[in-house]
Image (cartoon, rainbow, N blue to C red; front, side):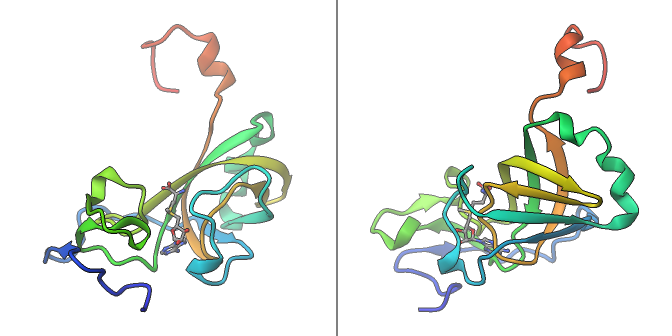
Length: 159
Ligand code: SAM
């Protein structure tokens, strides 16, 4: 069974071309995972070292990132089908709605992971805790804990 084949009972929808948002890939995630079968379902902090290769033109935007022990990565699960309404997780009998799952197969296949930041090497972050295929496009990087925001009363402006 190929990765994209429907399982018994799974349902899909025909939608017009996806063009509501224009995102820019800002880099690539380099992982040891070459097939979906190699990927963990969710990463963990004791997983292998992975590289977040940011577009070098954006490197100054990383300044200060070392203050965060954990960071949140948003990425585009680019090898996912996007038409599934219901799915049977892990090939089981139960059918669940796509939005009740963290499956990679969703209308907008955005993945997010909190990862442990090991070190920065210029425009590259070395992290642990990823679960995606090698070469997965990167959408955004955010600190999990934002020190300056914690000191400020809530609701007083953007973080
Ligand atoms: N941690 C993210 C989340 O919760 O949003 C992703 C979780 S998703 C269950 C992780 C799975 O997506 C992996 O085990 C693999 O099967 C699949 N996957 C990883 N990289 C992918 C990619 N680039 N395109 C499609 N599927 C991918």
